[in-house]
Amino acid sequence: MKWNLPNILTLLRLVAAPGVAVMFLYFTRPYADWFALVLFVGAAVTDWFDGYLARAWGQETKLGAMLDPIADKAMVVIALMVIVAFSSWSPWLVLPATLILFREVFVSGLREYLGDVAGTLKVTQLAKWKTTLQMIAIAVLFSQGVFEHYLGMSVFGMDQQMIEAILDGEVEDTLGLGWKLAGMEWAGLLGLVLLWIAAVLTAITGFDYLRKALPHLKEPR
Image (cartoon, rainbow, N blue to C red):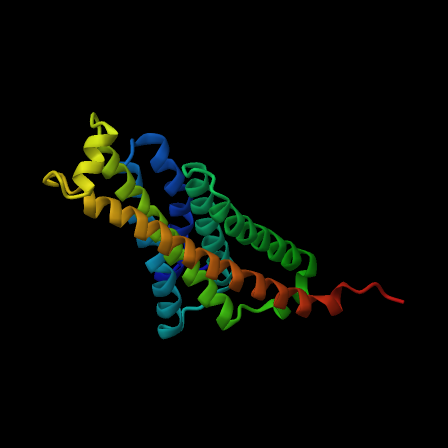
């Protein structure tokens, strides 16, 4: 195995994937949301840097080619599991997350079965866009958790009538309930829209991989 900076960045991204879930085990919210968001975004940035540096410095290796897709999938799968686990289990969130998880497992199984001919399932440009969109959607959904819990901390001890009066402008909004609520709602909506678009691209790329693999799945006559 050949270790260089691109490979080390990829390995750090792989290690960061379970770290996102660990944040919610050792920290209370919204601090866990903040730490998970920063860790996830930082790891996602390395996804661009490790590939760019490997190509620019001529340091592309088999180890990097093997670790890179594993790290990407681990980041997306674990982050989606955390988001779904701490959400209200809305079907609008669960459905695209399920589709993404199913596709990742399915394509990984195809690659393992094909073995030496797995090169027919090369990563396409559309698949790269899919991964980028997944990571952006997840980051936005993590930010929703931040807004949600700061809002919850701000309204703690208030009754519903007082909250409505502040949001309606009848009482001065000294705690910023308005922008916290708006941030939570917009981050949730934008995150869901991006996740659904990513899920559609996920399905398209998954079908494309299946189409390319079909000739190798036919039984000999």
